[in-house]
Length: 225
Ligand code: AMP
Picture 1: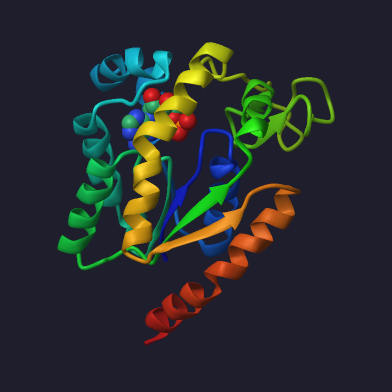
Picture 2: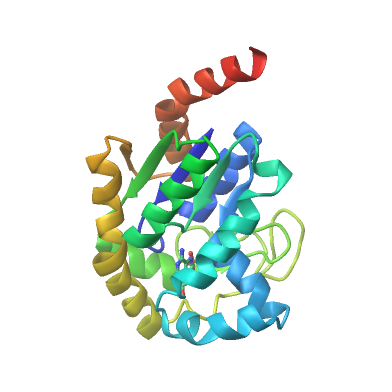
């Protein structure tokens, strides 16, 4: 299964991509995570990405496409993947179509997590995540059982440095101006499925699995055949 997961910052892409990745046994490829890793490792690439990330702007297509090209070439992506946070503009979407076209591995579908924009600020300002396992919490709506500790492995939770109000506003503006057209790109090719991303996390996962059923069956058959 080859899936793109689209949605505004805070719409739940990371949380749902992680669950789908476990369910279908395909890697979650999140450009934001890959960029944060590059930044933490102190690499040249991370250094070049830092300024844009701190300001909530998009990192250059050159950097992001390089990361994606490398990641998709790894063995574990051969049977499918779920892209989370990529593509973020139409140039990236077109480059992805070309890349996958050359590999004769077209996308199955693009899923859009749709949510009321007013809910996003609270989701982002309250967001905490586990640096060890990637689980995401929210101090307002989904707090961990113990203060600031991951329920799963007890690791101290972290608040992303770009989850502050001024950067968030910028990220939401960037989504509207650059990423909204990506939705139209997939709509025009009839590859877009919109899913309501409001409500309980389990409920949203259920909705996603429901719309993915036809693709799961098709890829199961391909594997057997
Ligand atoms: P995310 O974790 O997806 O919210 O991404 C965090 C930040 O990484 C974004 O605000 C951008 O600065 C950068 N970023 C992530 N993915 C992309 C992408 N596909 N294109 C450009 N910049 C990106």
